[in-house]
Image (cartoon, rainbow over all chains, first blue to last red; front, side, top):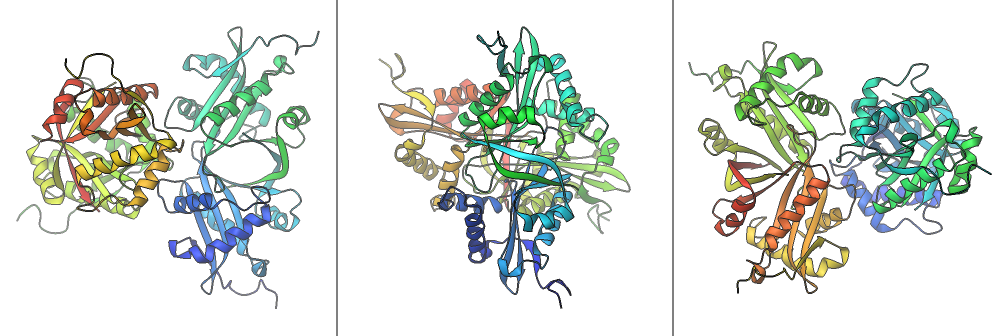
Amino acid sequence: MSAGEGAPAFVVRPLRREDRPGWQPLWDGYNAFYGRAGETALPDAITESTWERFFDAAEPVHALVAEEGGRIVGLAHYLFHRSTTRLADVCYLQDLFTIPEMRGRGVGRRLIEAVGEAARERGCGRLYWQTQAGNEASRALYDRVARHHGFIVYSQEL
Amino acid sequence: MSAGEGAPAFVVRPLRREDRPGWQPLWDGYNAFYGRAGETALPDAITESTWERFFDAAEPVHALVAEEGGRIVGLAHYLFHRSTTRLADVCYLQDLFTIPEMRGRGVGRRLIEAVGEAARERGCGRLYWQTQAGNEASRALYDRVARHHGFIVYSQEL
Amino acid sequence: MSAGEGAPAFVVRPLRREDRPGWQPLWDGYNAFYGRAGETALPDAITESTWERFFDAAEPVHALVAEEGGRIVGLAHYLFHRSTTRLADVCYLQDLFTIPEMRGRGVGRRLIEAVGEAARERGCGRLYWQTQAGNEASRALYDRVARHHGFIVYSQEL
Amino acid sequence: MSAGEGAPAFVVRPLRREDRPGWQPLWDGYNAFYGRAGETALPDAITESTWERFFDAAEPVHALVAEEGGRIVGLAHYLFHRSTTRLADVCYLQDLFTIPEMRGRGVGRRLIEAVGEAARERGCGRLYWQTQAGNEASRALYDRVARHHGFIVYSQEL
């Protein structure tokens, strides 16, 4: 029997304050994967600030988690921002992570769908995210659910 | 004598309401270049809304123009938005355009620098933009002033 | 039989774009009552902008209406804003209006309650509004549903 | 010689992070004066959050201080928010405080003026604040610099 068969055992739902212990290791793992802030971990002050923004209704920063049997097994952090070519905000899915042992079970796909639903509900017409060109595992999924129009990202630290 | 010699004749400054007649053709040209909204032009309602946002202090959407001898010869539209891995907002340079006859004179470079200065002044630590991978003319400049970390953009219309 | 008996025939619900024809006369009537902008009516550009903000998910400006038999009979416009003494935003009920022939039927009270529910749902802990000290008709209701702590409003046109 | 004569020895300027030790006692004194949060002090978490918002360019919350000889002698906290009857935001001067020994020297007046200048610069056309009707000392100043149109404030805790 393949991992994908049957109804998924996990549920996708908004992050809650009491998820902190379960969410933290995924967030740390995600940041370790991308090696943010050079070799060092993301400063705690940023994690605290982002965490508070998830629960501040005045902030456009949101989080969903995938939970299985009381355990957080995936996360999606997204935010809304203006665009010069849209009336409504666009939705940026900034962070997407599934714990290794749950990969291939549709967690990432379901998280993307749920972000899309939340964005659509808010009147938003575009969902986007970034990935490293060489991240073939992720791109196998992304190529099925979204389109890549050949845009690459340049950045400057100021 | 190369076009780049001597002091640039153009100045870079914030967009003003009275620039509308000079700004409009550049905006139209830029959108035609990217073929936004399929084969059709950007709806007027979006241009009106974006224009008003440039002058609404509560909106994080801003515009700079390059002017030479009273003529608008370049534009840069940028906006600030949250990030889950930063305390301060990041700056997205969404639109950058120089009229064809002014290319190679440093207009784009100077516009990027001015956006970076505005962002830094606001406490922002990251400026980024997107470009099509095959846009070699632009990338020749971008590779000198910024870094490309291999990220590509996926998107969904909702 | 008193006006308050039986189930109210009106419903309170979020404003919709198709309510524009029914909403406009109430808005005009409300502004005439307060004599805003001196003797002149509120400029159309402001009404258009406020109307669009009601439907822009990035804006903290919202509208509810009371409808009876397909007719708009009351409106409540509210917005959220920061406070230096709160974590969450506070809610300002800026505009509240019931058409004269529906007064005394509980429309204003129900609109205030519905704004309070929307605010509470957003995590907001304080709802406030202003009224003229001499507006006895309105204050009879306000004194039943809220408290007046003796604060008065000073303002400057800049 | 009256206290008001000669050039004021104090300066009014934006709050800086290093002002924290000097700002804190004024903030505590101000909150004690208004007896916020019942008999208890304002929770530290709120002070921390408001403090951080002063330095977050994405937040519409700002602070000015009056300084004399290196000592913070007055504070003004203000914020911008939407209005249904304006295109531009309005400015709410939420907190204004001068240490007792500096009263009558024009600190409050100068702080109000400076907030007005900051608001005007941002395109804002209205500055307002609230005061208790019985606060005669403050109203003596307010009646000289602003107008009271008879509006009083009702509020509900949700």
